[in-house]
Image (cartoon, rainbow, N blue to C red; front, side):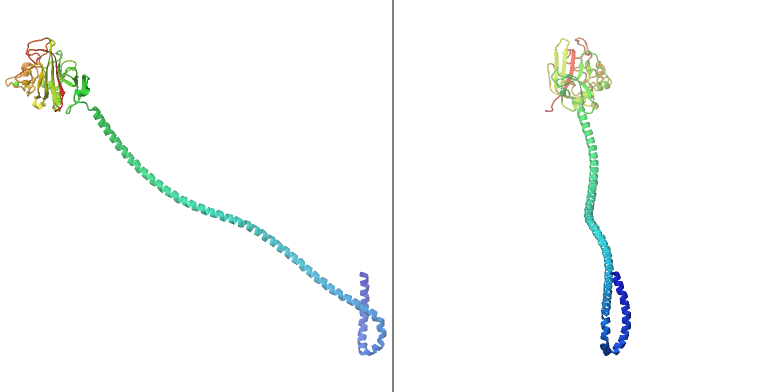
Length: 390
Ligand SMILES: [Ca+2]
């Protein structure tokens, strides 16, 4: 094929040259001798006409090749363009892929953003909650502080109340102790319990007394007892004032105590007298009392008498007490106490003499103990007992 084309090309070149020469001559001759040619050219034309046709054919083919070459070039350009477009498309595709990736990432990010928004919202809610809790905490703190202050105030009040209560308890204890220690003022409080008990009366300290529930009923305080002569009744003022002896023998309670006992309440007086022959006498006065020391312990109260003997104390009523060192008797010229060697409520001097000397036998001595002379007393009890004021 290529050889054919080659030969055709050579022939074509030769023909072109001939034609060019012929044509230029023919142009000249034919143009000049057109009519001649028509006359003479019929011969030439017949000879070269196939060749001319062939050349024309070749020329046409050449033209066609040119056209195809142009088309090929066009196609090449288009192909190049298309390749370029493909490259561009690839770039675009890559960009699209990248953008898609970006979109996906952004979409993912968008989801994260939603989550972030949710988290932010939750954080905001939590912040608000925290703020509320802070406010509440502050309120609670304030309330707690207020409660603490109230508690402190209450503690102070409680401490004060405790102190007051302690003081009150001390007062109560003191009162109870005082109340507990408040002793009876007579033997009535001890019921049937004879013997020694402690009593207390206003103005002096408590002291022991011998209570007698056997002799004349309950509640008697023995203010003097003579049993065996163990105590002398020839004593000075101070000794009679204070008292002397012991409760299991001879004793005298004391003028001041007798005064205190009889000054604060009414008392009755009972004198128990046992003779040596065993006979028992008694003298009872429904009122008895002595005044204070300034009045020399005068018998200022001596009530109605009752007894199995004569009332031999009546003459001594309203008499002051006298001792050898304190003459308060009605004997102006002398001292009964000094003369009779004993302290007693002397007039001038005695009708009854219960402070006489103790004898171990019956005697008619004026110095002996007697209520109704000459009945010598072997055993003597002088007792007092509170009575109602009615
Ligand atoms: Ca006198």
